[in-house]
Image 1 (cartoon, rainbow over the protein chains, first blue to last red):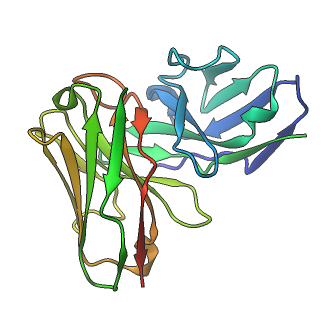
Image 2 (image 1 turned 135 degrees about the horizontal axis):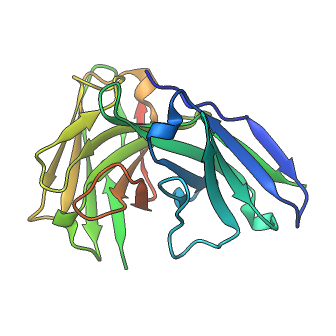
Length: 109
Length: 121
């Protein structure tokens, strides 16, 4: 089955830039989506299809992709950005299904 | 306001069945694919199942294929997850989520509920 690998944790100071990676074989073939997940709340879609963000999301969130790695970048990090972040793709190669990454805990120092 | 609300979670014995429901409101329900996602304690998100906007296509994660069935009743704006042969490892918070784009799939999920808890014990 398809595997998406994320670093377990990323720490960043307020005002700095956080980068969260998501590695997967041939990830370039599929659109990558990113979710922010805070305890006790529903997940929030922050980037979809690699580089697009929903209208309700701050432009501080951006997505990119190169080779087998997708990256979520959070600019000018704020305390409220502290959360778990998950990448996701639609795997067309092994059964047509969504796959989530392992998740990254972002800590704002 | 677009929202989905899950219900039906409870404590159930191993091997038994359970039905979860998800009611949508504030959007044209029959225009969107719907999903079920879960998070077990201390574990990340796991996608479980998807049903297309018209119900013609259904997809399942390998972990639940053959045990879980997704369906929809557009007259009631509801999507259902029938779970059978439940195991301890099915213990989780179960979320319902709407796919982002009308009449499409695979572009992520933008409307999520607060989840309904299932404990298999």
